[in-house]
Image (tube, rainbow, N blue to C red; front, top):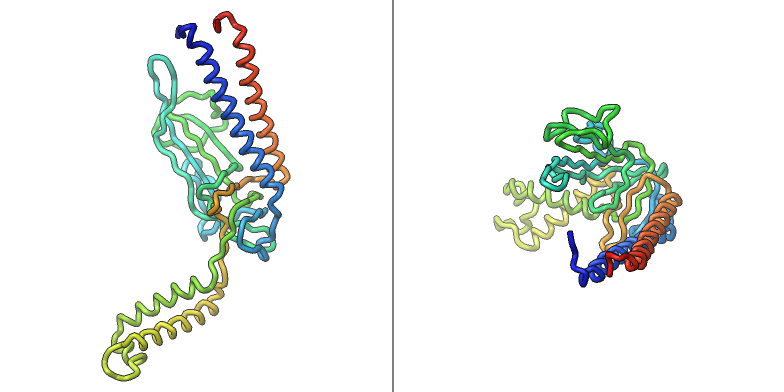
Length: 296
């Protein structure tokens, strides 16, 4: 494309400025992430208080049945996949999305001292395994073959990422707990609903003045009784407390990574240095390109 001479400095300056700003933004994000990983104390799940935490442990499935990834059918605790179709036009080769989905099912993190759930929704996730392969059907006919690489050809491209079972993970996010009172309230509501369906028994137990109806005071008595019975059931069933690490409500980073926190912090510092290099590169490109004859 022949750009008018008068617009060349503006065009080049705009491209370099946008590139430098993007690199600066990514540099700051990675630098903050590295600092966050390093500064957040590591907790033991058994004794961890609610709030922003960093935990390290093994990933376990939270369901009795093992989970399988949709495309490769491999055992995992989390997966994400994308299927793309090759689009050919006059000047370029590109890919358009056909289908994509990401697992939202919580999994268990076990640090050897205690356990908690991890809700992966909205997390920045570094997978433990990733596959990309090609085929000619909208849905892969099977997992990737031994020699399937990005050099292979096909009308469709399949990409799947996973967190494998028993992988050691660093999880940084907000630890929240559901205590007994929440379970008791749910159980009490179930009991009250059941009692309402048997009006004869309800009146026998709680119609203190025997006027054939349940007054407000008598209903409060029924509710108190249901809460007491529910609490007993909860204790007998040993449902004490369920904790989950999930996306922080205040917008802080939520990270799941298959490495210890030292490696994760080092990785983020390397990324920050790389983005800083990109930013400097855009500035140097502007300075160098301004000397080209094309520029004047």
